[in-house]
Image (cartoon, rainbow, N blue to C red; front, top):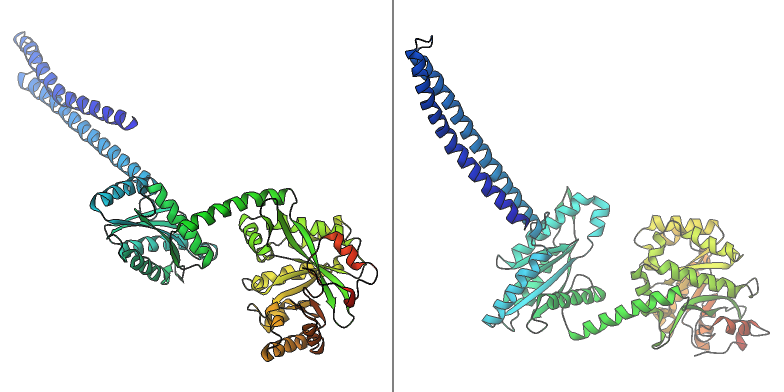
Length: 525
């Protein structure tokens, strides 16, 4: 409607200009004729003006009016051109991404539906690729948004280069793109195009004076097998892309119906998790840590357990990653720590409490303050708390992790390196971060019949002693393994031999009487 009104105004303006252009000279000519008659009378009456002077004056007056009209016509045409250019620019911005020049979501939906109609008519196939860049956020964080914009422009150029002129390419926002290509039915073109896209996008990009590498994860949906309308195909390709990211970044996946079922299951799990954390349904269970030389319980590790009302017990390795993705990991950790402090107040004063910290929490500069606030609230001594972190959690930023550890240790909290040997820690990390405990990964303990594993356990035990760090072996399930660990100099152990993770009331029974002795600890589960 606004465009129609604008056009109508321009038409009316053109009519006005034409009227001026024709009317002014006509009026001046008529005025000149009339004036000639009147001045002729004056001349005949012997007035002072000469006839030629009158003619010159009137001609100049007519000429100036004509010039004015022409100038107004030119100005009006310029204004019309400016408005039309502004309209065209506005239309361009409404239909295309201003940074890359690619189509936006609106144009994608319009043109994709048209492409699908053509594909159905011609008996061909249409492949929809959802392309999500990997490692793009660090480009903005480390090198600035100008570098990030340069990367996006380069990605758009490479998509055009690989997909060809006939492809429909759009940017959906952020670092997500869509590429639509027509191809022969049941051919291998989608696979070849996806491979080519990944190779090209994995090549280094020079952006704002620096060279960066991003790469891409791609999800693919096919028409007509996966859907026949734009909304369905884009959703299917998006599901396939997330499935690829879940399995391994930098790969591509075709959509399958099972993916959609998993995605719906994940969405349902997320909704239930939010409620479970808010209502405190996820509780700490406690697994004993034994002193091998004294044969007694010296501590408990708090492990999150979620008993879903319809699904039953959901393992932590299933729901903890989802909690991290939802950004609720501190809320869950705080709930577990609070409940653990309440339970541990009834334990003997020499029994320690261990809790696990997720990698993302080490980036929180207020982590130590948050933990100390909970300990203070429940009057729990910091010296009885051990915070466990995995090797992979410290790799991203050693200096940042060192600051967090220092804050915790200055408050009296001890730090344990969990799953040692499974990740990428080095001796320099042990020296720089100054852990208080080492925990050997259970994979080495369960294979103690192997000479190589025995050598690794022996070496780690010796390393711990040399650095003044007690070493705990995880995953101990038999007395033979416990005896072998004791012989190798390992000081502490944890596993089903000494007890599975149990609720707080079971811990009280475990600690009563002589149950702190190794010989009286029953194997659970």
